Image 1 (cartoon, helix red, strand yellow):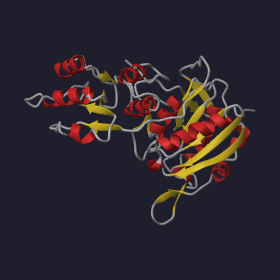
Image 2: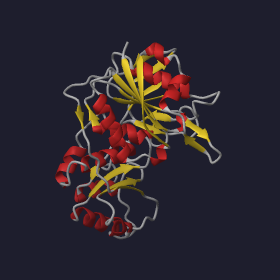
Image 3: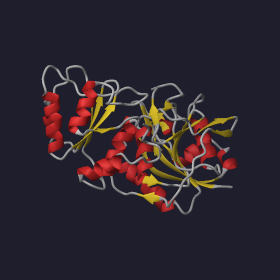
Image 4: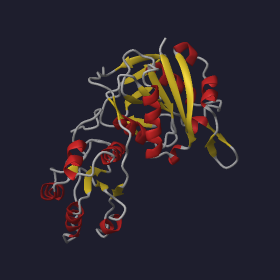
Length: 330
């Protein structure tokens, strides 16, 4: 039997209502005890790394998760992280950059209801996560949720309450789980040595444009931001409200040594700035980096990972456009 380490980080799956709303209270041992069939799937150990609502998880916690996996990498065949759903897609993407070429699976799961509830998705999600983590073909970083296996860089939370909380954006699901059996759609292969990273940069901001957005916001962001993810409309472009203020502000931002990545606020099918004049002109004249089919979660965490390694703008561009774990879809 495979030897799997479960790393508990909190989230709804481990929550109880103490009178002021749900808060994580159950331990990793509590979770294991409530799904005794896990012992039939593999040999399992647990560690309580943290016990947080995922709203409170950020880069510091991602680095702790990656470090825990690195320390234990040679001792286990796979890893299951229990996690809150609200920032799960960010964590999955971040770990995809912090842990690369991993032939041992890193599986992230959680639930829309606490595992202590009578009717909950938690037990099945946890069981499915272990089923995938213990499978001979499993590798890489994935979200396992609602009987589906989703690549870490392609996952996005699309529903706030339904059990089918996550979708795989513009990329097929790796596998599904039916009647406790894995059915693969994609056979993934890992080539090269597993690489762990231990730094994440800061100063990444996402600005979702709305009609009439004021270009003065660029100046307000400068003291706080090194990289800006600009969520534009449709396939992407810079607005021109009868003047060149947006173009001038973007040109000044780039001239100051900062970075802009253009993406779309539309969930599926990605950006394509060459389609319309408002996008084509901006991309060609200003040399903007384009995200194409990347999720916003992947764009943000990839930039943070890159800024943990370099401040050089050309190196940032080079690293950003280099595909990692299928994050780049053109």
